[in-house]
Length: 477
Figure (tube, helix red, strand yellow):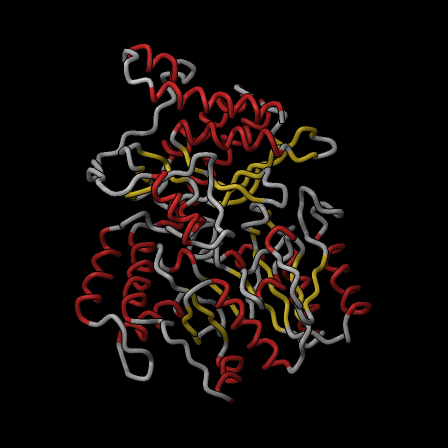
């Protein structure tokens, strides 16, 4: 807390200095920036943002507080007014450039305002924005075909929705209808959405309202760093079997998991876990759902889909975020057999797969392939992880460095043996990185994990800048 008070005083001092316009610019520069090393510069980028003439942060923030729901939260003590984006960079109202290492919460896959994706969206918008699936349109069919071609096994039928929460809700309904069972299982520390149904699958108390969840069970998380069994997948799988035997009727509708938990702090599941668990779930009459909302589309580098890192083929796959590079778009892909259960009734989604989102989504798939973003994530990600692991040797506050590709987590602890979350210190470093021009995410139940999940055009110079700035921020604690 003392550290936070000192930091608030520093922020207050900086703001006071800014308002004293009669102070000479040389003194102003020295006072505010004397402690930033000269070699810590954001990588050069050949782009000039448009001059911003809109309302400023204070006015927007006041309006937001007055007219938008009080549950909305914002990053940073003084919230940023972001007005423009280009590839891996964002610009605020003053034209200051930031390296976006969080990609609009792991959503901007190809880069902000990627020209080819913008072209596809705008060309389709000029012709037809909306008609729904009661009429034929080639965009949704072309996009579904392209998406199905990326899936292994018999995962060939696509349902389009508008978000990850919607995708997971539809997948859960499919599982229950197909199996005739009700019980769903997810992992502790999971995040699968915030709708009234998916909030039950989510297993972090900070995101859950006290409402009925209905037949949802949470089993021990196979977390190699904090988990009770370390990296021993078979012990975690046994916990699932025990839970089925003692905590359910013995029959399941389905099991859902992220391969690398996103909101939970970039936690990669113990190797081999999903293979063991999928067998157990199938024997209990359930289907297996892979939540690829954050790990899909080549972000892990080693594979196109996160579930492939565990050597499994799910029965249902859900996706959103990176599928649209910022468009409101999600999808559920499953087998013809499971998909057929929805034909019992009328199943319809007004905006799902609308022409504009379908054209944009197809452009995203093409750009990822054309620009070889998966291999790029593997290359840049391994460089980033290597440098972060070296930094861990230098600073005891780094308890764990984990992830793969450009889906990376850095966990901060005050005590490596006890793994005590370094909550206050993480908050200070979070602000310091913003001052230096880097925007990262935060995750984990205690908010002590930096989530580094940038647009997939993020390069090695960007990675070096992040690590150098983090090194500097830790040294200033």
